[in-house]
Length: 347
Image: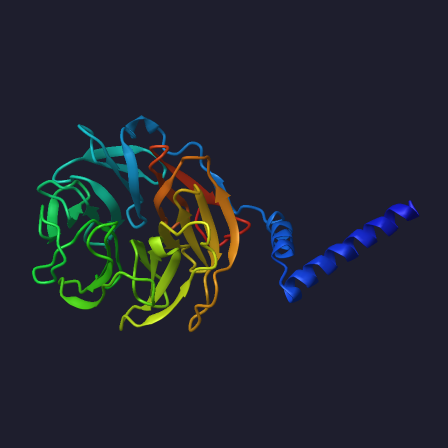
């Protein structure tokens, strides 16, 4: 028995020396070893809701994007395919309500921006048809309300405004609109529009330096007034000041294997949820404090099955549930936060 305890203490001492050596002497092998040891002790703070939705047969195409209207308790899903409904509407409980297809060509991104007086859904359309290369606003029943861009014509123009494969948008509480354009097209830019569609600021050049992009694929805004952009081709997330457009910093240390395809915050603002498409993985990342961007710090991961391909995701502002649009699996899955980790979220 005494020999067992001596061996155990010796093994612990040796492991501590390994970690210290990797920290101060820079051995990449030992750094990786220490990282794996600490990583595997983390419990995943989400569980898959296997009962969502109630009827998955409504998924009949490639599900590219999902948006949660927490105010109304609705989930909007846009899918691609021939002779199928392009937009599906579910409740957050998983019940199917309706579908519509009017003026939707090839959806890429979707955002729900409802108020007490209006339920609205925005869709970025990358199609080559008469409704392509636009960003369109609909009501909850699919009636077209507003079109941004030049329908059916891709371009780089600002007056009139043109898009080429607009990837995603985010509408904040004031009605201002943040657009990432485009997904492999002519443009690599981040645009901020006012609620009456006037240009407020723009970053719009392809490159690897600060405020330059290579496939800006997803955008979100945190409660501190910072704009976060998944700069997928450059394998980083860039951060900007919401009001001025000033570049605040970037994260790239978490994305050496693959760039981020989607970025959203948990309702409490403490964590960033990031999707990595080809790795079929979700990252839970600690959000930085106000006034600092720092380095990316991964708290946990959700590893999906091979070839699931999580494209874009959204997070319920009420429950904290993550909804993931998977183009490989052709479905949307819901991950529910564990109450022990997120006691402030609703049920």
